[in-house]
Amino acid sequence: MVLKLYLLRHGETIYSQTGGYCGELDPELTPEGTLMAKAFAEAHSSIPWTAIYASPKKRTVATAKPLCDAIGMKMELRDGLKEINYGKWEGQNVDFVKQYYLDDYLRWLAEPAWNPPTGGETAVQIASRASLVIAEIQEKYPEGNVLVVSHKATIRIVLCNLLGIDLGRYRDRIDMPATSVSIVKFDIHGPMLQVLGDRNYMPEELRLRPGT
Image 1 (cartoon, rainbow, N blue to C red):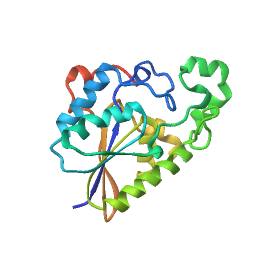
Image 2 (tube, rainbow, N blue to C red):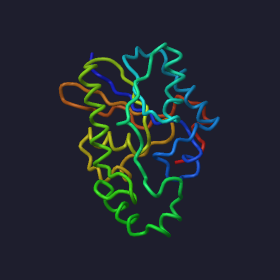
Image 3 (cartoon, one colour):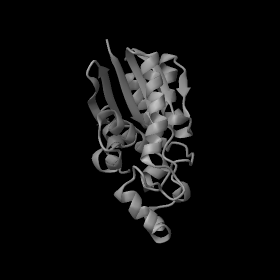
């Protein structure tokens, strides 16, 4: 048996619906987001889970809770799994950022590995803090199934870091819809991506909802 890491993005929020920048902000799930979390729990509760890790934000905790309740497992909260800090862009949309922070925005689009949102974090910084959590999981649980509930940018950066993809291309190479799950298997050859951004477990009316 090997370690399998299930990387689950949190359920829908108002910001994933509108496309506004939301990192340090702490919105609740929408009603549909709550249904997405419940659908994940119903579809995956039969897996023999070894541990459940989550970002401490309300939206990630609420996404992990249905599964934790169903199987009676406590979630481990880690700040390293939090979303990118968008700094002065928090709560704003792209048009606002282009109007007031155009130079920073263009630099971020071109090379987000090293250029942050104004006052925020780079992809390199996110990879650094998130990798500490992944290393902890690998050390504690060399075998089994571990769920990690995190955020859109953070999960994409984690995947790039594990798979040897340029961190500066995380926004260009990997999509991560709300409540989608990706699976990485660790064996003697290192991490292997087995599933990317899957939402086939949820009802069609949830799966087809628009959003970012």
